[in-house]
Length: 163
Image 1 (spheres, rainbow, N blue to C red):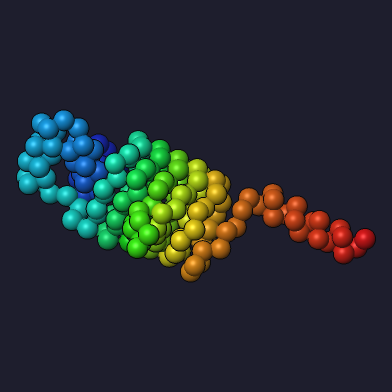
Image 2 (cartoon, rainbow, N blue to C red):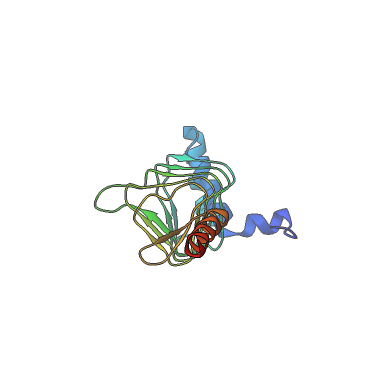
């Protein structure tokens, strides 16, 4: 958020909503104070965060129609608009790792885990575990791993075909 002054950051509804959520998880006075601030200045009404273990550094870009409900969400995650990290009939998402990026419109559903450094593409529907460092996209998602691993697989296939 380079180029943003502190006052412009505080005007962002997504920032206020996340700030008030963290404040309400503290002591009882924090909960009461967050409700008073919410009534006075408002929050992003379509951004819903109900995560018992939320790591620092969460960035919500355009929190419109965004629901974040895993049991654990790691540090420095980036979530775009219209994202659902939510329940399925089987239960809630178990864990979202550190440094995970979730693209616009993506759905992460059910009792799954998303590993550290994973990237979920726009409009992806994730219904299976995502290993650390993996890139996924599509409906349902397809796993696209580390580029180096992919290149080694291509090279081994071409070498065996020559061979």
